[in-house]
Image (cartoon, rainbow, N blue to C red; front, side, top):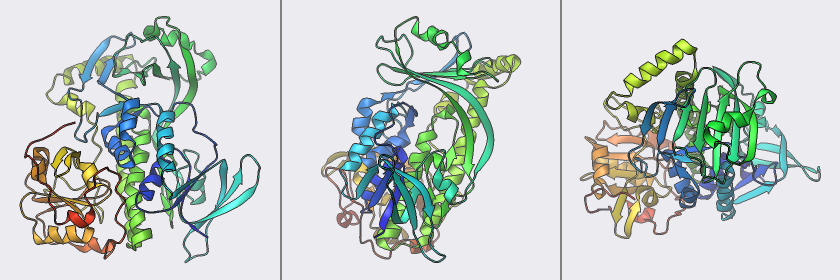
Length: 528
């Protein structure tokens, strides 16, 4: 018997993919070589867009209790003297959550495992190492994963209609589909240090970026007693050469701490030349690697999962056109490339060059920091627009298609709720006034949740001149109205929605109600 979907790797991206699929009734088997969560910290930051994904997964409130919001960015020189500071003035961003969130990855993974265990559609098989993938003859769909039990050595296999390669930077899945990593011309060796310090250090609660060509670095407080440092290694320098306690002294001042991890990492900028073979897909680090300078490494993998899961569910369970799956790489690859190039540029601007470059950079940054809006640009968390695709209908003058919609609080008949909790896993149509014929057709065909924007002044202001916007399940705007009649994209979707996404909120607006019950509110913006 073939499984619907096999996920290789039970890291954050693999677990999130499985949960998003399970919410849409898709069965998954997760194959993971390790028996438990990898215990050491790795990723340390998620932005507010990714918090929305955790909200859809159902763990955001618990995660928020375990994470720390960041207050901004402080650029310092080699003596830790402040060059300039960029502060976040608002507690919540446009997506309804803090714009910067520090985390310990093992804690996040445990929350995701607990959430996955609550779905009968998900089976996690730990201690199962995938050794090879076999593809059927031409014309057949599916894939076979050959596995070996890491404890007993027993060999076996799992057949699947679809396989998601969430197996990291050394991806076997990537090799199996014949993909290679394209170098975006960035490679640096860095020392990463994580400590647990019971004594509260006298530090700012944002990120310190050390703009020193002799020893560039980054520092942040990750959790109540956990701290992270990253230092650029010089050519030929090894960990044995580093007196790391002296490196940390300016922050610790001799306070006792426990070393959690001290490791060398090579930061790279690469993107796979292909993300798919048949029904085998690459996600996360298997598809792309980014330097950590804008904190988007793990977040990009979450965006992969969010982009692919709803499309895959429509194809597997509702008979949507197979071409729908082509939009995954079409949309995600250029988007993540833009994010990686941004990270490379930020990394060089803050750490590259020689003493003369550093002096010029300091002067330029100090001058630019006084310009109106510059701080907002530096602290901006919104990701680039998704490019044109069959499911992103961008036309001249349309400023919304391809962007993520905001997430305000709405006043509904059942109380005050966040937008995403009203939408659940469904499409949405946000509008002002009466729906025109094309927008009404789209809402009916998509079985969309229809929301009157007047439930929030934030939504009214966001729509601007548009009378309506179609919101995809990943919260990306598909198109706006009024527009020239263009309904060809509907042919990619099922002719009849037979398996609406499972609601995970306490008081859902069902899809049957949604196209006729328009939510009206008090006409003012709410924030939580």
